[in-house]
Length: 127
Image 1 (cartoon, rainbow, N blue to C red):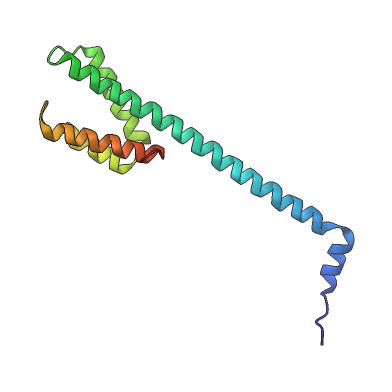
Image 2: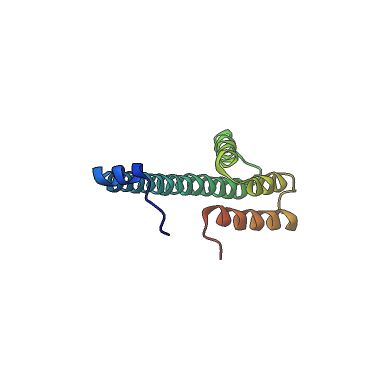
């Protein structure tokens, strides 16, 4: 014995609402997908700027040695703050670990390499 189609479903189909509902669902799905892509692109851009700013600031500090100007210190602190805003917990932890190491030590270089690897992971460009 075949099951009867509910009368409300026949009514909705008769009004052509099935295709309208389908179009609305498709539009909502496309909106969500587009929004997700835009947010992902924005997150990538923000992280890339923050990470490159930090690496430039670190290179400047390393190049200057003991003659660090207040401008360089401010640029470094702002770069650190920006990474703390957009970086993953792993990057932030490695940044703090890097800061806790002595200048010119092998441990500091290891922390920097690990931090760069985590930055690549955050950006989705890891090997």
